[in-house]
Length: 275
Image 1 (tube, rainbow, N blue to C red):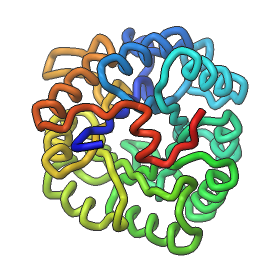
Image 2: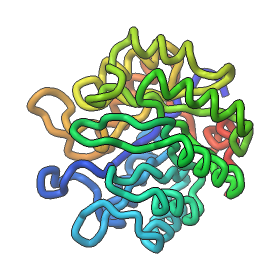
Image 3: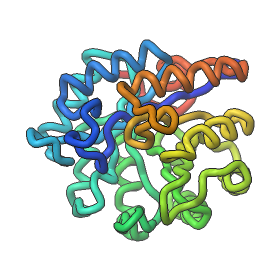
Image 4: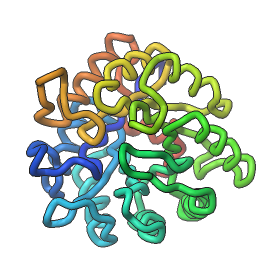
């Protein structure tokens, strides 16, 4: 495939309110349109949170199935559902996300202070979620908010084997208050601790988005961008569409002589089964 960059877009998240961020895609129509734009700009994966009719985060099973179907009908993107949901979602609802049949899902490798909240991911839940991904042939992306979570990832792989598809792919989520800082020194330490042969992307939350992007490209990693993580292009300049962040990431990757990886090639890299 040559030297390329896998770009994931996380367009919505569960934290920002539509009333505060009017450009946030919260309806199915808005999400599909966003996905189309971001695919054309270079994204290969869409990391999905959904909202209800009042724009509140939800894990409603029928809405999740409809979302997966609509994204597959309208784009060639790899559909990755969040199993994190909102910090208040119960474990059983988060496990049931896999029943919507996504290509991938997020799997966070430990509990983390998330601003003023706590994002709960105890060991028994991690194991149950991981074993369900193996059974249902869903490829997990291991979300890592801190260095200790990388140790938990090693433990998970040692006890329960490789994920479906045989390849380990991680996302370093950096800059969350309570998690690891979004700087180059921490990124290098995290990458050095990852399992041998793993691929990885990095997410810089808020003002860490650009430092993490440049550090990841310099270190040979991939990128996740989107309005779940970043709401400004620069101080005082709000993001008006997710495609702006994807275009910026694609331009930086191309400048680094590692242009965006197309979705079919990303499927092969990650071991995702064909549609």
